[in-house]
Picture 1: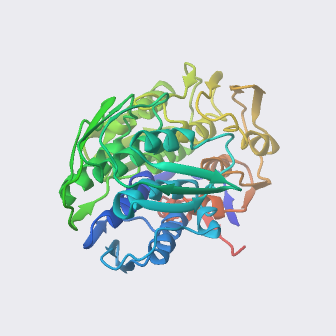
Picture 2: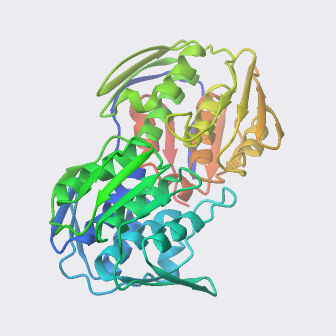
Length: 416
């Protein structure tokens, strides 16, 4: 449980953790060589722990070197992932493309993760079938075989991040050229491309809607530093925007956060940015802003919707949120309402009317980003807020409580 006492402005400087959504596919990619790779700036998260457990199950040797993670995949001996490991996180499915590229076969079950509504992996499987993989689905199990992966054209019906990454990984093990059209454009995909290139792969186009992979190259280990986590950065910016104060964030590229910083600037914050830092100042008196509509990158990120909503709970005026990615992305709203928030829901639309004050309450995390939003609400509320079931938060934040305490928040974690 996290206990937080509201009413204190936040001030200080933080270095943003490595990006959760970068490191998970990079850890999967590390098995495609028979060598040692070092992932620098690797955040210590429950999802990373789950990935490490999968790597060790596959036979890899993994160890922490302070803030870096070393993966020796030379001893990989399995191509299956058991159900208990798959259920620990949604992103476990990203190992599928990497295992196929290395072993030409794979067996796993459908993945777990936050319950944000239907997130079918059909796009992943369709892309892999296009590359020549034979896939059998039975009783929640996925069995994949391929004699020879072959380069081809893959057209994604939606710009899915996970499907793009799985296709990129599998294509590295395919003979010939693979062209992935309607690819997702997220910065984390660019980071994955950078890692693959350092391994010796030929990949280009990440960050655009067309990614081209020339497969069949011999891969080797490398050293790579993950980009900063733009959603963690959005969380801290939103916290300071809501409570008032001043923050300098280091280690994150402001261009990856332009839609979030634009929204906070519209709400009344002063923001100055460069390639590796963002500075925000707020008097804590925000105003309602133009409608926020989530969409694939470079649009407003669905992962930032909850924390920006939390920042605007006491704003003057009304803000409309339209969630276009996940149908159950508003599960945190009922908990915010327990604290006095005025939010009306209708399908994918949330209408937030700012209130003058929030009251501390006992609330429950519903998912990763919704849990962070509850903590941010507690920073603004009168009295003490107790946030329960914080294992969701630990999936994506290496030290949310400690970081906020360093900024001046009265906050502590109490063992669950």
